[in-house]
Length: 373
Ligand code: SF4
Ligand code: SF4
Ligand code: SF4
Ligand code: FES
Figure (cartoon, rainbow, N blue to C red):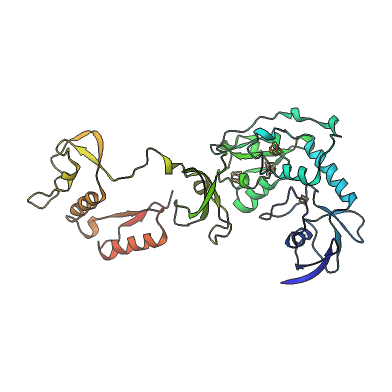
């Protein structure tokens, strides 16, 4: 519902009651630069790059933290505002570890975008340059790295971990120039409370939190996470015939763009050479031909004894053989003698059908599944 009318750069703009100037401007197609703003988490206004001038107010205000009011007159880019933004940007850049060509974020980096938009002509803060900060890069997490030398202290990762993940694995630590993102007691990420969900990495605007395998996909495929019955919506990024990344589907009502460690990073099994593509059966000396395992003796029992396992090896059989073998084995049991185990990787519908089959056809309530992953 549009219930506030204001004027931005001479344009009449309508905004929802309670919306910020930033939201009102962006919805109206008016660009205001941001660095610490992330629409998924609350705004705290630390970077000050979104400063705008508001008529009748003495000082510029951060658009991401200022509520749009009826009749407000806002200017987003007069020479004074641009000068302020340029100074702020120069200060941010004065201790940034530039290595854009080799940076995994290059091309998708908000800082690069800001330099292009705001401009960075002179290096007036040379005396402040402390690029030699040279803090150690935390590579302990198996899925992503944290390079504090590229961090711009926007705190989006901290707010993400607190507000979206609810884990509080990281926070801002130390003071002044030494302030940085840290785990509790400055432990490496893999020794901290971090659950490796990658939500912080997904929102980091620069190259500070980046995936270890930073390949850009050539196309994306919309799909559903195969790991559990929650069924989070995701996009798989594909390069050639290989999945190189996964991201949550913002429009999925199930997960609203968020993913856990399995959905975001657990796709390597797709190309694993260890992946089973056919049912396997233990090879026995008596059965060198896999098809023979489905033979049944005159007594009507499956031929399973006497058998000697051949060095613990498995032989491949096809699905018809596997199903026939399992069915013929199960035929000798009934009711409570049978137990069924389903999988949390099935859909809710598949699990429903399986429990129905177990209770109604197999006549047993002995059914469980592996949801406790
Ligand atoms: S974070 Fe951005 S600005 Fe910094 S080196 Fe990487 S690409 Fe360049
Ligand atoms: S990966 Fe997830 S749990 Fe770990 S710090 Fe980031 S948001 Fe928090
Ligand atoms: S790691 Fe990234 S998201 Fe976190 S404070 Fe630094 S720049 Fe911001
Ligand atoms: S985006 Fe508004 S203060 Fe950073």
